View (cartoon, rainbow, N blue to C red):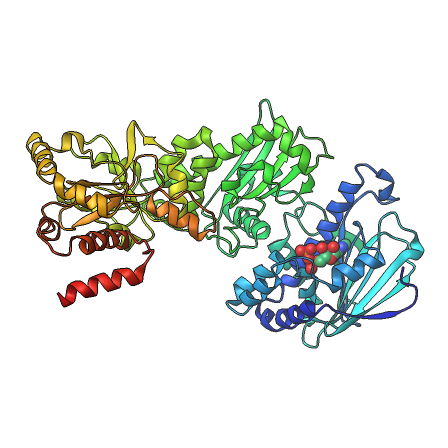
Length: 628
Ligand code: ADP
Ligand code: MG
């Protein structure tokens, strides 16, 4: 414990943050109040939570509240709460270091758009420092709930290099943040101004924010404050109010508070669910992906409350991992107040909540995707750009909803560069077409240029082009849509079924027959490289392509696995040749049969975006041919 006054230095990151915050957020300075009120409210939530098992922590002040006051003479503004408070160690750690990772990213982002910056500050857990935007000195006086009055702490800093801490006596538990306003910041010494900031940002804070009443004193001819405190916010958690009492703006403002996003959400849903499990849900779909969306370890964005008592942030058990972009609040009437993350994972009530909430989110998305309204359609298209890959993850993760998810998927195809749904595809299927054809590749350009597509293009059959990393994984969990098998055009032999007429089939068989001696020689030369060599009808313009057997890893997937450092069982491909191509038809009479065979194979590998095992050998062979 710290007894006498000590001067300590801020952690290096804090110094940088302080500098950036005070310099780059000035245009949006009023957010400091939102941040400090939010800390006060968090502190009260923490007390309420700890007091579930230790009611004595309430001491003699069971009503949790925040008080805002100002002193015009001394130019100070004080935010006081009777929440959990801090011990000396906690004050040093919480106000002198930054615990959260991601500080570097935060700082990189702070240099941009100011409005965005102001939201980021809360997201990165550095809200406290925003006080220094308007104050050139901050004093924090605090005592932890349950500690003795003599164990109070005073923390003071000018927000530059260091801060001081000393022990004080503080009878009341909780924290006072005293801001010594900078020159020119007198606007915050006005009750009216403070009230308007509170109602803008903190109306939904579920504990009362009190201010002293002011009245005009004719004798002194100035405003004087009376010793009577009255709430200046609504103090009713938004989700507990009835839908009809909440405006669109209030829903949006609440979203911005909990998400630290500056843009309005794409959609939201607010429901009281009754039945086996009773809960209220207020869920939002953001318009833009956050920077850390691709981190699958990121916990979800849903806060858990039990009977209006805050329990935890980011309660990942409330949503499946693939819906980790959803923000909001779930307030359960059934869970015990002392529920832990571990217990949540096993609870049947939580399972019911997760299933119910998943369905709600999917319904919101369906409403946008299926809407006739152009604005909604555009919203869905933008959702898809930012979050589409997560729904593909969902296909593998959420078996119960695979069919609903499949309908929400959008792809590129040989017909359109984006926005193609399975339903669109099916509606364009050719007479007699049974399967849904697709190809996977590393990029859209590679997919479009795949030789395997040639016959489909010639016959006007649409092929879906899958180029996302997660596509292969998704495909391993999705084998059909609406009774139509999903079939890779690069796997197995071409089976166009009824799409190929008898004449074509007969011709192909004949070619295969007469070409057999060449095929046998090719097989022999390419032993070890190609599992088999056969004639195909797949190709129109290209001489050759590689395919794998049904059930084998596609070339694309083995490359992905290799890149991610996973030793994948490599499957030996099959070389398919186009007997009508001059390179192939002239093979038999060539003096360079062996070299040509290898060149055909290597080119087929290159065409599908693969890498050559021995590029030097390839170059040598081609050069030999060029010289003649
Ligand atoms: P965050 O709120 O995201 O954690 P802040 O910079 O706003 O980041 O606050 C840093 C920490 O300081 C908080 O996590 C909390 O531990 C402590 N703190 C700040 N204000 C208070 C308060 N009024 N009462 C108790 N602890 C507080
Ligand atoms: Mg904070």
